[in-house]
Image 1 (cartoon, rainbow, N blue to C red):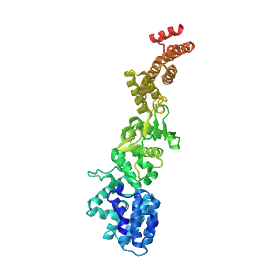
Image 2: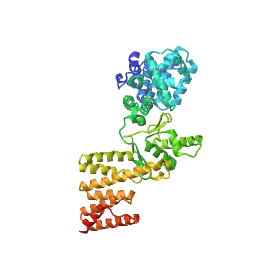
Image 3: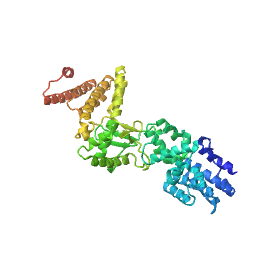
Image 4: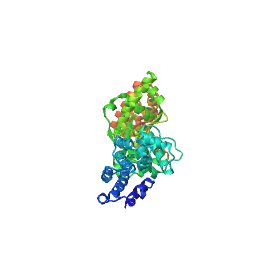
Length: 479
């Protein structure tokens, strides 16, 4: 019976997790088995269930194996049980406990002994990552193809846990082998790191292989597959940050430098660290500026990912080749990008002669326009050029939105769009003309006259004459 109990684990470790039955031998049946079967079956079941994220099942299976082992046993059997203990501890999020179990075993059975090296291969990746002694032995030893591939996975995990980029590997193991190499909690970190380096297809393939029980506590590690908007950044008007559609107002967000760092990166999308330092701390010595950046970035990352484990690489705002890179849609949206997309859609519809579609798209664009671009950073030198350009562009889009609404027979929407333009640019004669035309469209001559009076007052302040188009509307209003 022992062989049959171990088959699911050997299949799992061979890199074929899909071939392992969803239902392993029931633990009550395992509890009634002989001592040897209970030991082998308990270890095998614990390792597979730890890989699947079924921590409670893994612990119960481990307890059965411990009971069967007793006080005296061969070193190989003690090492096999240590592999189960370490795997279960990692699955439960207790890497320190896993490391302690490995250290205790290796104190009794030195890593150079075959019994240690062979038995701990039941949890090769866990032991390689957490035990310096076993790593040294396995790095010096010739390994077969399977364990050489697992060593590649282990080295990648060590880099991720240290906050470093994934090492370049010519022969990356297939996703099923990676997925069955370690407990799902670690595999989720690896999937996230793959995605962070632009290897999205590999990341999604790997994340999709995680067993259902491993996914619930690792939602953040499975973000590579999500299509929902998690982070929303607003640069029009006061800088705003939303998480899951809820406005962020945490203490860290009230720090101007935190908001400015996010605004600067969101404006550029991808920007070199040196440009950030020069823009936000231009008057500081390099060392002081870098220290300020580290602190500010820590505050910002805590806002974006408050529950991110320390060993997990950032997801939404990443560092790649000394560049800050902000993740894009759908997980992260920036209002100015949404504005641009909607305006481009509207322009295309207008060019195609689809008046209603153009009006709808322009109206969608205006929902993203909350005020002047980078409003609270207009005193910063880095924002001077972008704010002037974006504000002028937004006004043009607003006027086009108002005009399209009039053409689509929506005078109320046209008046609202014109009012939005005037909030941003009170000197826009074109916006006043839209107000006059919208009022005339609904037979409101008094409203049209009032809009003309406001326009004349504005032109008087500028010392400028009314445009011919304005005079035509004046004659229409006087009829």
